[in-house]
Every structure is written in C-alpha cells, then in structure tokens.
Image (cartoon, rainbow, N blue to C red; front, side):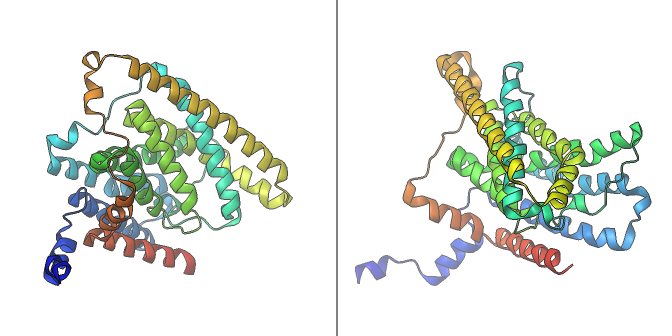
Length: 331
C-alpha cells in the first residue's frame, strides 16, 4: 500500500514525458526534428522546383538551408552557455597522425561494414547528397565544385550539428552518453536501415576524434577525408565488387587496413591522453571543462536513453526517419 501511495499519478507521468524533465537538453530534440523534416522536404523541392542544370548550386543551397541556418539560430537561442562548449578550434599539429589514422580507420571500417550490409550492391541511401547525381567531366572547375558540394560542405555541416552541438548538449552525462546519442541521431539522419551500422560506426569514431583532440574541426577534417574517398574512389570499388563477384581479397585487405589503422589510432589516443594527463591543470585551463567519461550508473543507461528518445520532438524525429526509410524502400 505504501508503494502505491508513493507512485506518481498518471497525470504526473504524462507531464514528465511531455516536458522532458529527464532529457539532457530539450531544445536539441527540436533541432534534430527540424533537420530531419528539412531533409525530407529537400526531396520534394528537388522533384518539383529544381533542375539538373544547376545541381551543384542547388545542393549547396539545400545544405545551407538544412544545416548551418538552423544551427546558427539554435546557437543564438542557447547563447554563451553553448558557445563555449562547441570546440570549434583547429587541432594542433601534434594531432596529425591521429587524424590520418582516423581517416584510414573510417574508410576501411565503413567500407567493410558496407560490404557486410550489402551496400555496395544496393541503391543509394535517401540523403541530400543522392538528390543529384554528381557529374564529373574531368575539368578542374568541376573537380572544385564536386569537392565543395559533396566533400567540404557536408563535412562541415554534419559535424557542426552532430559532433559540436549535439555532443556539447548531451555531455552533461559524460562523453560516452554524448558520443552514443550524437552517433545514433547521425546514423538515423541518412534514412537507410541497411546502412545504419556503417553510419553508427562512423559517428562513434568521429566523436572519439572530437573528444581526444578537443577540436570539432578535427572531426570535420576526418569526415572530409572519408568524403573525398567516396567522391573519387568508392564508385570504382563498387564497380569492382559488382563486376568480379569475388571480394575475398578485398575483404582481407580491408580487415588488415582496419586493424593496422585501429592500432595506430589507439596508440595516438594513448599518447595524447598520457601527455595531457602529465600536464598540470593550472597550466591547461581547457582541461577544467573537460566532461567526465561516464556519469550514468550502469543500471541508469536504459532509462536515460529511453527518456532521450521519448521526448515528443525526438519521437517526431523517429517517425520522420521511418517515413524516410519507407520512401527509400518503395522508390
């Protein structure tokens, strides 16, 4: 009887769900919902209003509409409390090998997971960057436009949202929680159920780069490295897989590269953290604001994730993701 008396009423439970007292940042869920909605809307804009003659310009304009503009408005809304945690500073030169090993790890890991998930033989995923087919006529100007529209801008836009803003907002519960939440929403952004493990792996690795280097620009550089691989090499790799039907050697090479780059990456992480730990906090003021690795007890993780994904705009974002997956399947 005493247990029943202490149980919150149905009205109180509904109030807790609707207002999201247990979420880390309520506005963040609205930002995610807006980005998912704008990304789906981009397909409608493409179908009815845009032509293939201005594909690069259209892709750039849509990216600016979907990512940086909402991000700018969100940062203005959140104010100085958020600006100081975005980590929008360049990495130091001592992080060079960390970035190179992360790029190789991202390329080999995502390609290997793509082979396992059947992505090499699948239709393109439902993303903004599949709205237009990138045409490269071999000229220098076309190469520059291709790199800008499909390499630099996507890396900047996506990392600004998912590794700068989302990590900053969710790291109240520690780096692990921030990395997982931002990676989950990043994976869902691509509206492709088959590719979910690929983008989840990419999100976790990019978050690790962001926190080890303490630089959001570092994750953008790694993301750009993978995008350049996708622009210039991945199509040939996909063609090889389709034409030969035998990918055993390729898988062995990818596994070897993944293991080597992972070992090198972990070595660089260890070196950087040891060097950082050896410094006095008074000589490194940035260390004072570094979030803890994990601030959630093990038994609290299911509840924390549940609350993050049951806040109404987060539910709306999940429904938009399901709609995007359905549209991708039936098209």
